[in-house]
Length: 623
Image 1 (cartoon, rainbow, N blue to C red):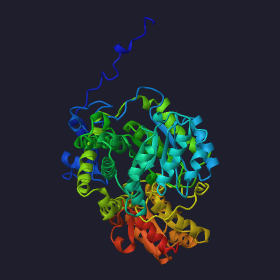
Image 2: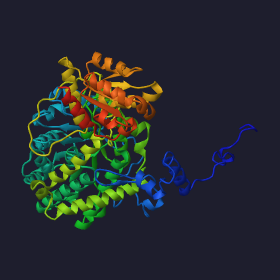
Image 3: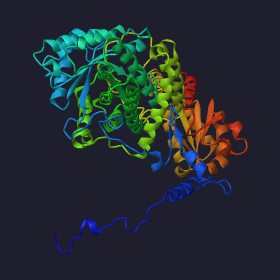
């Protein structure tokens, strides 16, 4: 080191800055929130906190600032009761969790090739879906023929053929010359989940059959509590945890009735959970489920070391989009990160083109490498509970745990099966879906590329279609983007028929006057695939002429309050006289001044019901 070199210890980059206090933060917040408020109408700090606090569909409170008081006194440790910080210990090895990519191509040779490619290039497990629109049970030996089962565990999923698939896998494993005592994985038997999808009575006799199939394989988890079924049907973080607990207890009781100890029963269950784009909620939910399941074990007398919940996290199908599909890569990355930080032992990342159909080699590679890069190059997999101790995460974990326990207690007295059969579960999901639909429609829950910043002229991703799935009459999987995609489909069909839906944007004044609102309004209508035509001019008749030339039925005034006050009403009347059936103003109607309410039919603004506006507009245009 030279004489002029300075050690890091001698440099303090923050030396010239005071340590900010909470009062300092509150002062700056009030400064921002009160910047344009009239004198005497300023917010106080209590009002500011209230304005900056939001709630989720489940009623979870998200505050703008968290302090030590929002954390926990004693964090505990990963790998030990109550397992909030992890049911297993990551020892710094390269396999932080099992990378188990989904394989569902109905051609067994195609699936076999894809399985081997994945295992050669980073995957460590195999996840197969067996259903009439995917693989069949008799395909399992062909698909897994070259897989080293002692190295790559197999996890099954099926909505309609669970026992058949489990038996086929058990027979195949038994026929292999490998020590069956060391094989891991899951048979994927979930009779309550299957009944929830089918709308039928759960047949818990499958529990005894599953136990019999698993006897030669002591480390296999024959049963799955598939919480993604309820998530994809509308459950939020709280209800996903509550329902997982309810189903899990039903299986424990059935296994105890079949002669198992509670310790053994707990060891036979795998939890399949969703990983969403709300990274903190996902982290907290996985932590919460482990803690609540450990509490269930404590009540039932399970040994502390046996009460950990093993979790298989899968990208939420509900958050994936068909349109602007490449954004799904970002969604998958956030979801994978959250599941990794949350401590999932197995992960499945759905390809970005999952909604479009069966994936390609490219999309499967991207999905697989998302996990590999996060685990091995970003080193996330070498850390145990990295979010532990973060006040926000601890607060969210506690909130989910408390509220989920309340929901769980409400259904546990009679049991989850009864709550499913008598419509209680569906009623709860319907309520959550109604609330979520409002948030989606007003874009309080925005979807990038779909309800916000749409690239509506982008060519959709085209993929090989899946075979037709059997019609089920139970809980219905849904996607948040569906309502917007349906609107865009209406516009596309109208465009193909020569009736392209369009809206004229009457841009008054200069770009400085109308630019912001024109951009907002264009984005708003393009969400529904509606073309926006920009019209500029100096006189009302200029806009009237352009409306006729465009043959548009709907027009929107776009400008500043100052320009609206001097020109808005006259331009609106000219547009109406030229044939506009509906005239809106971007912003507040009051900005038009006297006569404004009579001149326009309404206004467009941030926070409005976008779905209602676009539906009404397309109806008016005959789309």
